[in-house]
Image (cartoon, rainbow, N blue to C red; front, side, top):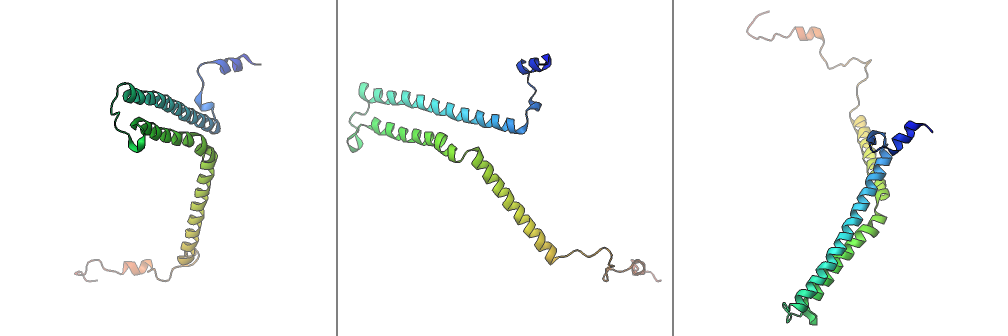
Amino acid sequence: MNTNVILNMFSKKKNPSKLDTEQRELYENARRRARQKKRLFQHFVIFLVGAVLLIIVNVVIGYREDFMPLGYNWFVWAILLWTFFFLIHVINVFVTNAFMGKEWEQKQLERLVKKQKDRIAELQQKVEREHPLPNRNETPTTTPSRKDNLDINPNPYTQK
């Protein structure tokens, strides 16, 4: 194996122009997914800390202990609501992305582009049908000749 190839493989300076568009797209998709999962994990940690904090505020400190909607402490409802939002986040990251991921997006994009191209072709045919271009070999009958244009006097006050 060539030493230049080995040095280029392990060098820290990578030439981004060598990456083709497909590799870059795969990289960007992987980076986006990693960012989504990272945010989900952060949401989970904040959820756990917040739930513990709500329990401490109600049970230990005694803040609004007498407020019990539907027979349960208020912090239970707050945690349940937060759990609902967290589950929506989980569904968005894992379930929705599986059905509406990069492939689905690409198919939708191709479908819409095809639809637009078909519509443009249809409109082009309609324009060509309703307003045909004259043939280049034919001389237009309604256009005045050069001689006719020269006979027009631009100044009506002068005599010919």
